[in-house]
Image (cartoon, rainbow, N blue to C red; front, side):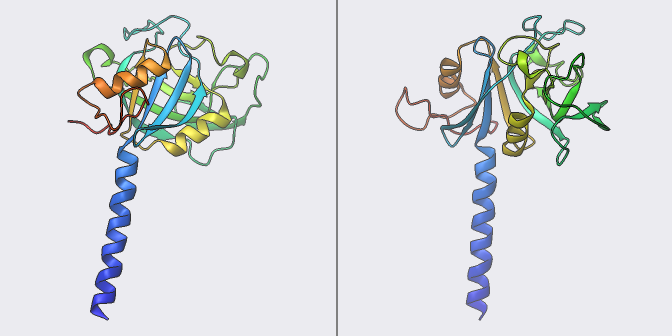
Length: 207
């Protein structure tokens, strides 16, 4: 009886550790020139979505409305369970719901993933309220159109929100998506797993 209980506890612990490791190995890569985001886990790209970065280019200065580049992390997640098109003001749902491409409206909707910069070149991202978030202006997705944040379609940002844990890395790159993913394998923060060229990137944990 004691052995059975001990064995069950060991199995539960192993499953928990595996689940945690899976989360820690998940990261996202944003390509500014391609206007796309990829989710990479255990070395494999598991999802890709179109995005919209800033119409004012890249950068991290206050009042620049630019999208910061480099190594960031998800500092917080807001909006779990909110309906598609839920309008957020000051990170709180107002109770309003907007359909995609609602005329004359451009608020933050559906989900918010709040980013924190991890490098000198993006250190202001958190204070600047740089998010990955949903937008009702879905017809502009795929081209630079935001005021600094990374915009997504509502249905896509829900998927990303559910896939990405707090603390997960987000790389915003000025390279094409494939090259940006491959570059992670060569950086000191990421480990290569598999032959070069198959775009397999391992851990996004800090070294």
